[in-house]
Amino acid sequence: MASLSNSLQLKHGLTSWCPGSSALTRRLPSSSIRFRSFVVAASSFSNDNREFVIVGGGNAAGYAARTFVEHGMADGKLCIVSKEAYAPYERPALTKGYLFPLDKKPARLPGFHTCVGSGGERQTPEWYKEKGIEMIYEDPVTGIDTEKQTLTTNSGKLLKYGSLIIATGCTASRFPDKIGGNFPGVHYIRDVADADSLISSLEKAQKVVIVGGGYIGMEVAAAAVAWKLDTSIIFPENQLLQRLFTPSLAQRYEELYKEYGVKFLKGASIKNLEAGPDGRVAAVKLGDGSTVEADMVVIGIGAKPAVSPFEVVGLNNTVGGIQVDGLFRTSVPGIFAVGDVAAFPLKMYDRVARVEHVDHARRSAQHCVKSLLSAQTHTYDYLPYFYSRVFEYEGSPRKVWWQFFGDNVGETVEVGNFDPKIATFWIDSGKLKGVLLESGNAEEFKLLPELARNQPSIDKAKLEKASSVEEALEIAKASLQIV
Image (cartoon, rainbow, N blue to C red; front, side, top):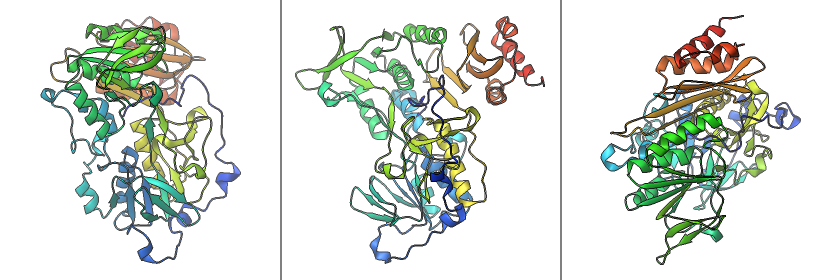
């Protein structure tokens, strides 16, 4: 789902890590990794396809599978093992269209299997069968032996791999059980089963409390509005999406949500959740002793990289996740990590980052597989990108869609009145570093990554005088032509 990583803090440089360290340079070339040999009795292992194994069933796995197919290296060679019951799907739908009320045309599988999110083919379970890809569902990997190149699953299966891609993503951060984090009616959202459980509660609820003022909080609150429920958002920060939004921009969105009836409790701490006589959650008790009634609570306080049981391949203790180089190689030859779980060199900003976003999941998987299967040696050069789309259900008086590219550092210039457009520009040392646009058209959105990647010198005073978003974007566009 579209979410700003808790680990990727755009405003601050992270501790640098050199991908050329000895642990990463003593690797076999990709051609050697691809065909690492093993000799064992065939009956010892549960998987027939053993040359390449992907662990994980999310976006990254789906896009990696497509790339294997494009290179003619999937049929009879690739196995995907997942804890989920479904073929890989576009996870952002779970906090957007999937949560729409039944009378507002909600998204449902197979409608959002990968790779429809980027305009590609819908990879249904039948697609994987047709391509000769072996799928193991609902059986998470619980152990790895890097010397024997084997994996153990929860059901006891022993799997063999030649090359391994770890695409396990993240797990939702949870409230401790001792403060009510496991009460019936308390929800976390990471997969289809979570979303189905949440919908079941939405159908019966009257008062919804959402904990967290980030992506999950904003998107679930917008969905609750569509269900016409009494909705409150509680978070400890002083504004929505503090890691990205400026205070002014956050205020604009808060005002919009308030127009829909959403209530905000900002700067609030939570002591515990309280249960009613039936054992279901009934209230949220705040740090000041007050309570907020609720018959369902949605916890959206971030996520943690799902590194277990792969700690042995090497973790990054600064940003979390599995440490990789610019080709997504770990410190263990033949083992790779992609997507949310990978801590990788963010080349253009010269720092290591871990990005929880569908765009990175897609691109990192494709880059990794291309490097593994071909002579590609150029390092991953990712441009941070985040977006959100809410209130897009039928009958909504206002649809919200914003995109951000780049780095949110330096001073800001805000242009527009949010009716519906608004743009925020981040300028550092005279250069345009990042830009966010609300309600742009296709051509305007297309301009944003070009601006963020080129980081042109820009006249801040001229930008501040722009009378409209369109004029501001023209000024920014003109700056690209200045040498």
